[in-house]
Each structure stands twice: as C-alpha cells, then as structure tokens.
Image 1 (cartoon, helix red, strand yellow):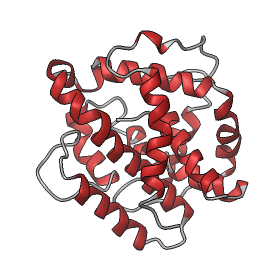
Image 2 (cartoon, one colour):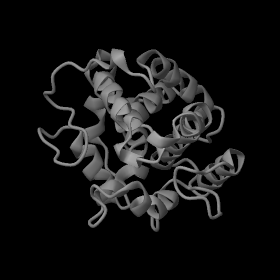
Image 3 (cartoon, one colour):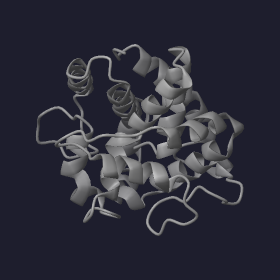
Image 4 (tube, one colour):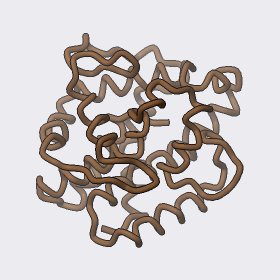
Length: 227
C-alpha cells in the first residue's frame, strides 16, 4: 500500500506529537518499517502480490478471514487486531511503531486503496506492477529527498530491532532499513543518490493527496495507539 518513506514520515509526525526523545523515536521509527521487512525474506524478495499475500497478512495483523492481502474490507476488525497487538506489548516503542505502520495501511485502505480498486480495476489487477505502485514509488522518493526526512533518516541507523515471532524477524527489519541507504537495489525502489523526483504528473495518486495523507494518517494512528 504505502512505501517505506511514507510510513516513516507518518511515524515521525506521530513521534513528534508524542514528544519522544531521539533514542525512543529511533526505535519507534524502526518499528514503523517492520511489517514490510517480509519483502526481504529469502524466497519472497521481489515476490508478486498473490505470492507474498499470506505472509503480508500475518505481518500486517490482518483480521481472520479468507480475503486476500489487498482486499481486506473489515477495517474496524483490522484496527481491533492492531490494538490487541499493542496490549500484548505494553510500553514497547518498537511495537508501537509497528502498529503505526499497520494503522497507516488501514488508513490507506480506507482513504485511497478501496477507491483505487473500484475506479481502476484493470490497474488493480496488475498488483505491484500497477501504475498505483509506480506513482507511489515516485512520491516516496520525493518524500525521501525533502528536508523533512533528514531527522528520521539520521535516527534510523541508531536503533536495533528484534524478532516478532510468526510475523517478521529482526534480520528482515534491518534489511528494509538498510535498503534506504543503499546505492543500488535490484528489486525495489532505490533512494540514495537518485535524480530529483517529479511526481507532478501522477494520475492515480497525486502528490497533493499524499502530502495531506501524511498528516491525516498521523492523526488517525495517534488516536488508536497505546504508548
């Protein structure tokens, strides 16, 4: 749904609203990458949406049911699963950041993704090869290159992850974090030393829409987490 920098920017806004000191914010931000660390699991690197779907449902705390990843409709049940996860990890900033990642995806589902699937069914059927994902990647690179990302990118390398058994491993979380600072990534979006991003021509997901989304998703998440 959302890309790594978008998740981090939302989490950074939440961390700032919570007045987290830098060491705590670093852990919180690393947690906000965690659920998508499964994209770096051996055998799943570059996997299609159907092939990674069951793993993503587990890492993203989706409610029980037969709906595939990307087609979850029970948003209230999904929020309840996130809050149950938080109650299992009281006072845990890595878990709180993890929850904000998932809540951001829930807000994406509510505010963008369901309408995308309805209005652009042929594009939605293409999964990760759709124009939606190409446009989101362009916006994510734009966010990465903004000065507003400097703080979170400075803090991220100072944090250490741990396993969330049955969901994602520390190694996978570190792998997605390290990808943000790599010169080259054969499979996923590369951020470091790229030409200036220019998502102005986006048709499905606009830059203005995603700029509003950052604040809206932070408010949505902040109202539903326990820290």
